[in-house]
Amino acid sequence: MQKLIWASLLAILAVIFVQGCSKSEEKIVMATAAEFPPFEYKEGNEFKGIDVEIAQEVAKILGKTLEIKDMEFDSVVSAVSSANVDFGASGLTINEARSKVVDFTTSYYNANQVVIIKNSDSELKAVGDNAAELIKAINKKNGIKIGVQTGTTGAFYAQGDKDWGFEGFKNAEVKGFVNGSLAVSALENGQIDIVIIDEAPARLISRNYANTEVLSAYLTEERYGIAVKKGNQELLDSINQALEKMRTEGVLDKIIKKYY
Image (cartoon, rainbow, N blue to C red; front, top):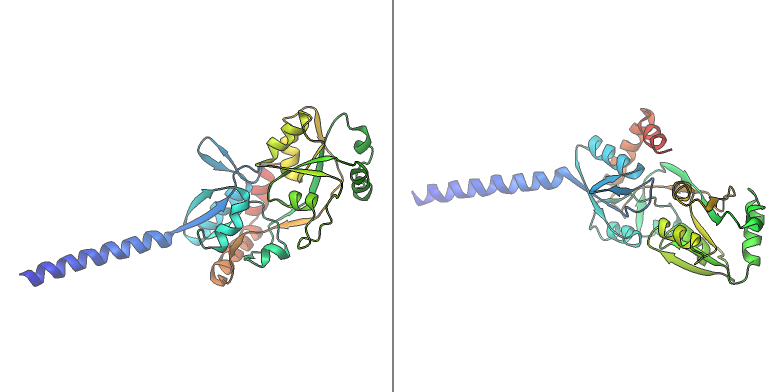
């Protein structure tokens, strides 16, 4: 009788264990910094944005349930590299420095760094779409205060970074902010002189600040990708296949156009 009871208990535990593993395998966890509209942001408790919808579609194709972990942008790549999450999607520019610690999927979006100014800044406004002249004009302003979102390409561009191939603005004071909105608010309040940030959020944020505008010159040309742990080829291939399916079926383009 005791043997029968023990056998039954072991059978129940085995079922619970298998179910637990199955539930774990059905989930895929994404790291993001949900303060970067239109790519990721929150409305109440709901995550929204281009990256969010792409991740949801990828999870659906892979037969997984998406779980999103919101964190500061600086932590996204490290969360992926340390396997605390399965992948990162947070407007991540593919570059050599990041590719040393994570693997990137094929690119799903082309992006650029732009400058936001106050409407009253006639000197920089006169530069138009000439990036070389814009860079010269910024360099001429000794002590110019540049606002950036901490950890982003714009921050590396303004500060200068050898790994990224950016010279930086030597005569500038670069101030980091948690998100682009705070940087543009500081610009409007006169705490900084310009903001350097990705074009899509720049145009979206600038609409909310009547005294600001986005210059048409592009400082950089970048590509966004989804990051996975270095060496996780199976997951990388799976996400790439999902992205290709989305491209072929027009789903990727539809998601991006929804936010513009």
